[in-house]
Image (cartoon, rainbow, N blue to C red):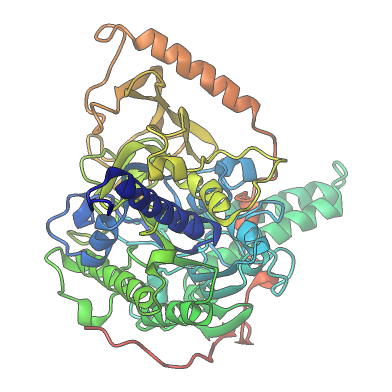
Length: 608
């Protein structure tokens, strides 16, 4: 007798087969190792994107990425400055562990390409892990060096970068170069984009920095003279070596001061392909299109995969170099134009993935290295980003505005579209997440501060794996975040906050960048906020208005003590000596010091 079509046992087999096919498809996707595209903006405010609440700037391509993937609302940079933030992003470790956190407010980033500091060779990047697993790895963008916001008088900044050093002992050793940190291919700027890179702009190093360089030069120049007098007079013995040392240091400081007035563009604004200089100085008006062209070429070359492409945008830092076709494109002035040009670039990369039928098999991640800069202005016009409701901005160690950044993941074959996650996550989490996805083992000889995000992104975990996150400003611990395991409450304690200038302002307009030490306020007891209910950090809690204050601070204090036990002394890469310009480290094509060449093909993409 024929079985009826509606027989349940028959449908059971059909459903079981469908389930197995679906699961096998997901397992195949996971086991075959996806391509990975990492997109990092520079100084983009978390409120600058439509998918994060902005209604004045159009970002359709980034919004599409969010609608087709997972959006993180409490995604946090490990530092509010470029160099330490990107070091943590690449290594999954707090920057203080690698010596990439400064003890001085003067040298929070490298001011010269010809400095001698950088990401140490013994630090492992996610590119190295994936390279060992057979990935072809590429970095396109710029290598960050100088990261200063700017002042009303002189807008300052770099855009889209590596920002982790270049050479150690000679101009060609390139010990800190991306190709020595796991990348097979590099195209971009080893320093970053400054206002000095625009021929029409006046030299942009801060006046206060120039003044400090001059005062240091004068002091060091006076010391040899003061030591020479007693030696020649026979009052007491002074070693000639000591006199010569101070004289050499004085000369180096003098060269730094003198160079800031005329050679910055030629010495810092260069374009490289792997180890070769292709433009010096860089042609700022065409660099964005050249970078996109290189990204599309990388995808085309390695479309058979697996590949890792890290695209470090030149956008959206001052001086906001924007192609003419995008000027006036937005309702938010030049900054909005720059954001919309960046969105167009994102669209070009996504379009290339679609054309090569790689979208379903590619994890795409979009973020920013830190929050938007509040101080940078051109006259009355602001040139920085919007950090939404969050207090503070770039350079402020603990305030949310400087460290809360966009976080978007898209992997159509694995991740649910349109999902939103509110738990605390970190840029440091990318390191272990990519290791897991690429089938790589995490280093066992060091502390890894990041956490694998895949259980959270896939819905296999309900909460972030971070219980505590430590917010540094240089080497100084400014704030600590605690997510209670037994409830949804997230606390944040500020031990130190910057003094804003002028007093009562929302930023450090007079200095151009808030301090980590010195011009700060130490809080005893600490400022405490319930971030889960008060993300704007507007309602300060204390023992009088909150019964849990003492118990929360006791728990956070214990976590700080435990965290500090895991720190070990390491060489400081951002020391005053490493930050000095050194002529023997200066990359140069042509005749030094008048370096100059242009070996780049002028093949550009057409903008809409």
